[in-house]
Amino acid sequence: MIRKVHRGDYERIIQLVYHELWPYTRRSFPGVRFSRKDLLKRLRTSEGLVIGGRHKAAYGFVLFTRIGNGLYIDLLVVNRRARSQGLGTSLIVAAERWARCHGLAYAFLYVDAANAKTMGFYEKMGYKCRGYDEHIKCYRYEKLLWI
View 1: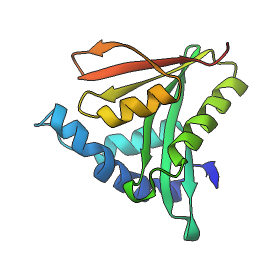
View 2: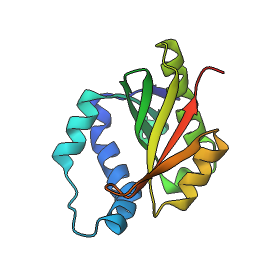
View 3: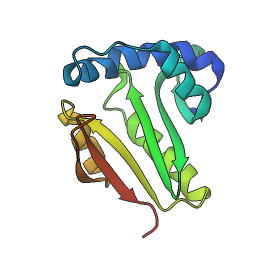
């Protein structure tokens, strides 16, 4: 079941980010520290969707925001034990549907250079690599939502 993120999901989302995404960030930026405060701010100021299971456990979520005429997908995380079940695909499709309903023309996101498997996932979802940002050590991916 996909639903909007609410405050009760924040702790599980923080744990998912720390365990599933943070290792890639640490590879790119070995000295950087995890900031719970910054993540909470992002959760409060963005739109989000979560996939929950029994007892409302969050198996995955997507966090996004509107920037101009685009949908910026800030975070997408699926618990590694729940992968290969289409949950990430369902979350991206739902975020893109939200963007289309709000009249947005394209979606974009960044992928850590160390996260090759995720790059393949986004390419399968129709995203194209549009360049590399040396400052954040990430590739930028984009997809037109209106064809």
